[in-house]
Image (cartoon, rainbow, N blue to C red; front, side):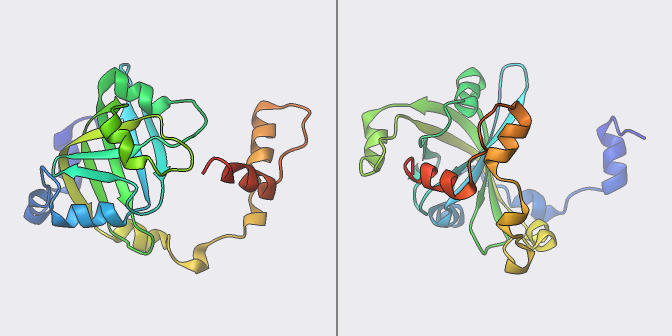
Length: 201
Protein backbone atom coordinates (compact mmCIF):
# COMPACT_ATOMS: atom_id res chain seq x y z
CA UNK A 1 0.00 0.00 0.00
CA UNK A 2 1.30 3.40 -0.97
CA UNK A 3 0.56 6.35 1.33
CA UNK A 4 -0.59 9.27 -0.79
CA UNK A 5 -2.01 11.79 1.66
CA UNK A 6 -0.87 13.45 4.87
CA UNK A 7 -3.91 12.36 6.91
CA UNK A 8 -3.08 8.70 6.26
CA UNK A 9 0.56 9.34 7.07
CA UNK A 10 -0.33 11.05 10.35
CA UNK A 11 -2.74 8.25 11.17
CA UNK A 12 0.18 5.85 10.96
CA UNK A 13 2.76 7.94 12.86
CA UNK A 14 0.79 10.38 14.98
CA UNK A 15 1.85 13.99 15.59
CA UNK A 16 5.23 15.30 16.73
CA UNK A 17 5.73 16.23 20.35
CA UNK A 18 5.44 19.83 21.43
CA UNK A 19 9.20 19.89 22.10
CA UNK A 20 9.97 18.58 18.59
CA UNK A 21 8.03 21.48 17.10
CA UNK A 22 9.30 24.21 19.41
CA UNK A 23 12.99 23.30 19.02
CA UNK A 24 13.12 24.86 15.54
CA UNK A 25 14.89 28.24 15.55
CA UNK A 26 14.70 30.91 12.83
CA UNK A 27 18.26 32.10 13.38
CA UNK A 28 21.57 30.86 14.73
CA UNK A 29 21.44 30.68 18.52
CA UNK A 30 24.50 30.06 20.68
CA UNK A 31 24.17 26.29 20.37
CA UNK A 32 23.95 26.35 16.56
CA UNK A 33 26.96 28.68 16.45
CA UNK A 34 28.92 26.36 18.73
CA UNK A 35 27.98 23.32 16.63
CA UNK A 36 28.96 24.95 13.34
CA UNK A 37 32.26 26.21 14.76
CA UNK A 38 33.16 22.67 15.86
CA UNK A 39 31.97 20.94 12.69
CA UNK A 40 34.56 19.84 10.09
CA UNK A 41 31.95 18.27 7.81
CA UNK A 42 28.48 18.91 6.43
CA UNK A 43 26.18 17.69 3.69
CA UNK A 44 24.46 20.30 1.54
CA UNK A 45 21.23 19.68 -0.34
CA UNK A 46 20.15 21.68 -3.37
CA UNK A 47 17.47 21.41 -6.05
CA UNK A 48 17.35 22.55 -9.67
CA UNK A 49 14.49 24.29 -11.49
CA UNK A 50 13.04 20.92 -12.53
CA UNK A 51 12.94 19.63 -8.96
CA UNK A 52 15.92 17.27 -9.25
CA UNK A 53 17.69 16.95 -5.91
CA UNK A 54 21.38 16.77 -5.14
CA UNK A 55 23.35 16.17 -1.94
CA UNK A 56 27.05 16.97 -1.74
CA UNK A 57 29.66 16.71 1.05
CA UNK A 58 31.79 19.64 2.21
CA UNK A 59 34.71 19.40 4.61
CA UNK A 60 37.55 21.33 6.18
CA UNK A 61 39.24 22.09 9.45
CA UNK A 62 36.67 22.89 12.15
CA UNK A 63 35.86 26.58 11.81
CA UNK A 64 36.12 26.61 8.00
CA UNK A 65 32.50 27.72 7.83
CA UNK A 66 32.39 31.40 8.72
CA UNK A 67 29.45 32.82 10.63
CA UNK A 68 28.84 36.42 9.56
CA UNK A 69 25.85 37.04 11.82
CA UNK A 70 22.92 35.14 13.31
CA UNK A 71 21.29 34.85 9.89
CA UNK A 72 24.27 34.46 7.56
CA UNK A 73 27.15 32.05 7.03
CA UNK A 74 29.77 31.37 4.39
CA UNK A 75 30.83 27.99 3.01
CA UNK A 76 33.98 28.03 0.85
CA UNK A 77 33.82 26.11 -2.41
CA UNK A 78 37.12 24.26 -2.28
CA UNK A 79 38.61 22.63 -5.37
CA UNK A 80 36.62 19.62 -6.57
CA UNK A 81 35.75 17.85 -9.81
CA UNK A 82 34.16 20.87 -11.53
CA UNK A 83 30.76 19.20 -11.92
CA UNK A 84 29.36 22.17 -9.96
CA UNK A 85 26.00 20.46 -9.40
CA UNK A 86 25.34 22.27 -6.12
CA UNK A 87 26.44 25.67 -7.42
CA UNK A 88 24.37 25.41 -10.59
CA UNK A 89 21.33 24.39 -8.54
CA UNK A 90 21.80 27.35 -6.21
CA UNK A 91 21.93 29.69 -9.21
CA UNK A 92 18.71 28.15 -10.56
CA UNK A 93 16.60 28.06 -7.39
CA UNK A 94 18.54 29.44 -4.43
CA UNK A 95 17.16 26.67 -2.21
CA UNK A 96 19.55 25.26 0.38
CA UNK A 97 19.49 22.54 3.04
CA UNK A 98 22.31 21.17 5.16
CA UNK A 99 23.23 18.74 7.90
CA UNK A 100 26.27 19.44 10.08
CA UNK A 101 28.25 16.65 11.78
CA UNK A 102 30.89 16.60 14.51
CA UNK A 103 32.99 13.42 14.86
CA UNK A 104 32.09 11.63 18.07
CA UNK A 105 28.83 13.57 18.58
CA UNK A 106 25.65 11.66 17.80
CA UNK A 107 23.46 14.75 17.51
CA UNK A 108 23.42 16.66 14.21
CA UNK A 109 22.37 20.16 13.24
CA UNK A 110 19.93 20.72 10.41
CA UNK A 111 20.01 24.13 8.76
CA UNK A 112 17.77 25.27 5.91
CA UNK A 113 17.51 28.52 4.02
CA UNK A 114 18.43 30.22 0.78
CA UNK A 115 21.83 30.66 -0.83
CA UNK A 116 23.75 32.60 -3.44
CA UNK A 117 27.21 32.17 -4.95
CA UNK A 118 29.51 35.06 -4.06
CA UNK A 119 32.94 36.17 -5.21
CA UNK A 120 32.92 39.35 -3.11
CA UNK A 121 36.41 40.17 -1.88
CA UNK A 122 35.20 40.61 1.71
CA UNK A 123 33.92 37.03 1.63
CA UNK A 124 36.93 35.50 -0.11
CA UNK A 125 39.26 37.32 2.29
CA UNK A 126 38.08 34.97 5.05
CA UNK A 127 39.99 32.25 3.18
CA UNK A 128 43.02 34.22 2.01
CA UNK A 129 45.39 31.86 3.86
CA UNK A 130 44.22 28.74 2.04
CA UNK A 131 46.99 26.95 0.10
CA UNK A 132 44.73 26.69 -2.95
CA UNK A 133 42.74 29.87 -3.64
CA UNK A 134 39.01 29.74 -3.04
CA UNK A 135 37.18 30.93 -6.17
CA UNK A 136 33.75 31.42 -4.62
CA UNK A 137 31.70 30.97 -1.47
CA UNK A 138 28.17 29.82 -0.82
CA UNK A 139 26.50 32.58 1.17
CA UNK A 140 23.61 31.12 3.14
CA UNK A 141 20.71 33.05 4.61
CA UNK A 142 19.39 31.01 7.51
CA UNK A 143 15.64 30.41 7.70
CA UNK A 144 15.46 27.54 10.18
CA UNK A 145 17.74 25.38 12.31
CA UNK A 146 17.20 22.59 14.76
CA UNK A 147 19.10 19.84 16.48
CA UNK A 148 18.45 16.24 15.45
CA UNK A 149 18.37 13.64 18.18
CA UNK A 150 21.05 10.94 18.40
CA UNK A 151 18.93 7.92 17.43
CA UNK A 152 20.16 7.49 13.82
CA UNK A 153 23.81 7.62 14.88
CA UNK A 154 23.19 5.33 17.83
CA UNK A 155 21.53 2.80 15.52
CA UNK A 156 24.31 2.99 12.94
CA UNK A 157 27.16 3.21 15.48
CA UNK A 158 28.81 5.50 12.97
CA UNK A 159 31.58 6.70 15.27
CA UNK A 160 32.23 3.26 16.80
CA UNK A 161 35.61 1.87 15.68
CA UNK A 162 34.17 -1.64 15.84
CA UNK A 163 31.81 -0.86 12.93
CA UNK A 164 34.57 0.37 10.61
CA UNK A 165 35.47 -1.97 7.78
CA UNK A 166 38.93 -2.72 6.44
CA UNK A 167 39.66 -0.40 3.51
CA UNK A 168 41.09 -3.34 1.57
CA UNK A 169 37.68 -5.07 1.69
CA UNK A 170 36.10 -2.29 -0.37
CA UNK A 171 36.86 -1.60 -4.06
CA UNK A 172 39.03 1.39 -4.83
CA UNK A 173 37.57 4.43 -6.56
CA UNK A 174 39.76 3.55 -9.56
CA UNK A 175 38.20 0.08 -9.79
CA UNK A 176 34.68 1.45 -9.37
CA UNK A 177 35.20 3.97 -12.18
CA UNK A 178 36.73 1.33 -14.45
CA UNK A 179 33.72 -0.92 -13.89
CA UNK A 180 31.29 1.94 -14.48
CA UNK A 181 32.78 3.71 -17.49
CA UNK A 182 35.26 1.18 -18.88
CA UNK A 183 38.60 1.99 -20.43
CA UNK A 184 41.91 0.19 -20.83
CA UNK A 185 43.72 1.97 -18.01
CA UNK A 186 44.91 0.03 -14.98
CA UNK A 187 42.74 1.10 -12.01
CA UNK A 188 44.45 3.63 -9.79
CA UNK A 189 45.54 2.25 -6.43
CA UNK A 190 43.89 3.74 -3.37
CA UNK A 191 47.21 4.96 -1.94
CA UNK A 192 48.03 6.69 -5.23
CA UNK A 193 44.62 8.36 -5.28
CA UNK A 194 45.09 9.67 -1.74
CA UNK A 195 48.48 11.15 -2.65
CA UNK A 196 46.99 12.77 -5.76
CA UNK A 197 44.09 14.22 -3.78
CA UNK A 198 46.46 15.69 -1.20
CA UNK A 199 47.70 18.11 -3.84
CA UNK A 200 44.20 19.65 -3.98
CA UNK A 201 43.64 19.91 -0.23
